[in-house]
Image (cartoon, rainbow, N blue to C red; front, side):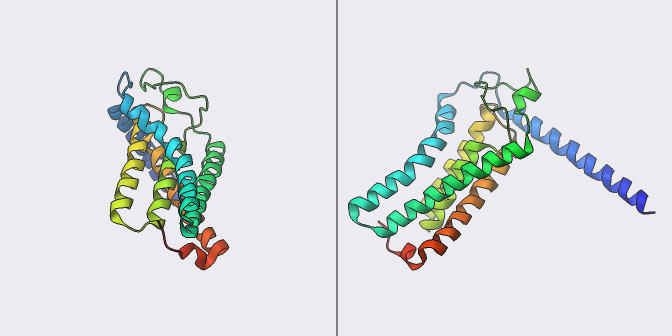
Length: 202
């Protein structure tokens, strides 16, 4: 009796896996063109690292110039989310060892360039973008800051699909990793700095 249920359950999981895999590659193919050379999406993709690493530095400098300890502490929190997500995404890539789509489907997925790192899940660019966006949204609780921040992060994720570098599930995993890293950094910041983190912003 139990063996039959286990076989049935295994078949269900197999069907779901095949369906999800088909959705993954079919969605990617619908977004990734034959010649993904758009300067807009290439620049959007690159902006993950420019803003991810540049923003906390800029915030820290602004805090120093205006003598705002609150802004400095928020800069440390954003920097913390960047550090955490870099470690987390890199670790997950090594554990999961998923091939990039252009390596698994040569001739079907068209990359803008062949990435040096052939590990696909999660998307590092997307992870970094969402860590930055979530950290900013947590610290500056205004819709007109949070909405553009998350829209930018989502556009980074889309750019990775357009450029043929990742599957949609890589991007989703990257978004989850980034947001989780931002909340972990926020929690650590509160533990380390306490009430000082609540000082006025710029």
